[in-house]
Image (cartoon, rainbow, N blue to C red; front, side, top):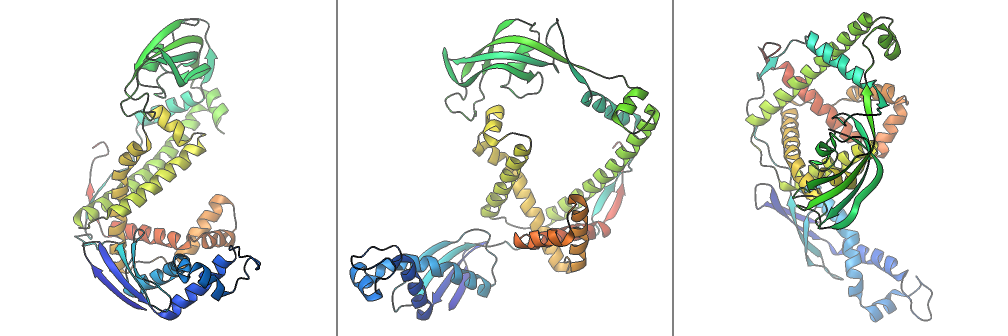
Length: 435
């Protein structure tokens, strides 16, 4: 096999490949076995048509596309290895020659992983913040827990307020006509949650039990349902019930109900300790983020759009998975948010660009400093995962290996070691806690 690689742009090049006739013949043989099993020829069972008869009747050319499909992935992969390049997207293939008794020639236009020109990455100045939990932060955490343990109590009279959960009927109309998805009965809506079309919940505030009201809203201009985007709508709303959060008293009984402690003071001490531990982690994460951002800003790299698109795909799949764990899906999210997939992808593309850029810079630093994840590092990580998921280490190792994710785990460990290296070689710039 002959391979020639030539760059035509910063991150794009052409792979010129020529494959010998022996491999072409082998691919044609495999293609014949595949195709002949599906061919009906009078006098012969499927799969038993002689090669010569097949070619005289259908032409050897009928095998070419299947043979190319069989041969191309193998030889492309080998050509990539020989050229020493790292593609980041599917190539554009241009077949120049393929035929019985001929060599196979093709060109592959390939987008490759970009080169990174590092700036200064040692001695980076990173702010250091002391982990101090204030009385205000402790009070806020107590208030949050108090709200979380509140009971929803049905009230008999009074106006609906922000924070109330209302039970309503609604029937929506656009241009005087009802529309799909615009009607529901005894729907539970938390006022102030922002889960409905902008302006809807605000107009339910102030309604009394048994009230009827026409709620007038306008769908967002980029609403996912095109027939409703930007349209004015009227919802006929009836309020059936109002449920209001009843907060428990912050006393010793509350502490006993929600924790293992007998007094509120003991519970507050434990909360303060937990908040401090959380703040230490948050500060460390902030330092990691700061050092990565600084070394990335000092580097030069041109990111191919294909890498940003691929990372956006990953972020979208991850977002969909998190929605699913909350009992939602993308369609419902688009309906509630007024976005569509294009808008969501555009929103995520900035984060995708940042993640790709950061990873490329960290990979280059790891390469420059010869930082790698050792087997010991991998074993330690698997031990942690074993404790977390309550599964044996060898079982987890087998799962990662079978799924092809063991290398991804090693790459993640390498990036973490690289960030630790950057922090160890950084300079501390002290700041006040409330700066």
